[in-house]
Length: 228
Image (cartoon, rainbow, N blue to C red; front, side, top):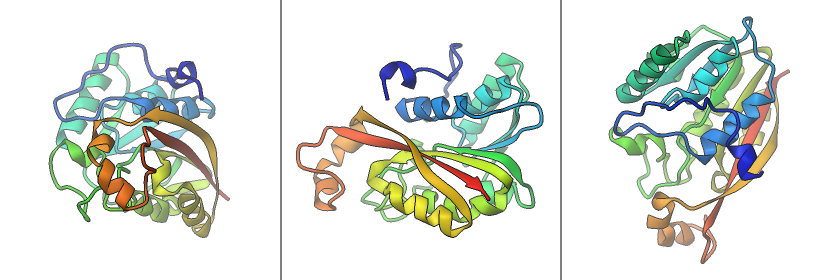
């Protein structure tokens, strides 16, 4: 995936980001490019899990989709609402756990850039900006929940688009989604330089066998799954 492709899909307008809210980065841009390939319109009901600044949700809303966005961070919820107001786009942003806040609803599309960075701390953090990236020792704390809940959240024919690190095991994600009755595959890959979080955990990641000695690049993957 070229750097040009990674920069497509997001609105060119500046995005407000309150302190502690995850800013759009390479994984956001890769997911935005994948979203560009999907058909969206006024009849599309879309749920974004972990909206952050709302950049992806707003891209979908700008194409006419009816978007609900959820985040566990009040700062992220406030940021996404502010960005929606600035653009005059209808965006329903909810605070809390995605499964609880959408119980009983089904969507045509699920979109998510969840926390996926492996962390020495077994459980997910309960506060602080690291809630946007830390996801347990294997990086799958949130990924596995999404894999388990996606079939019930999607309408027949509905699509899930998810981005995460190759460190977390793309094959495991595909397998879990298919066990739930979805058809799933990796549709895109991109290599990006390690950021400060991964660099600070180099020795731990190598000790866990999640990174090779001297590694400086991380593979990102897009998983696309469809309800049968």
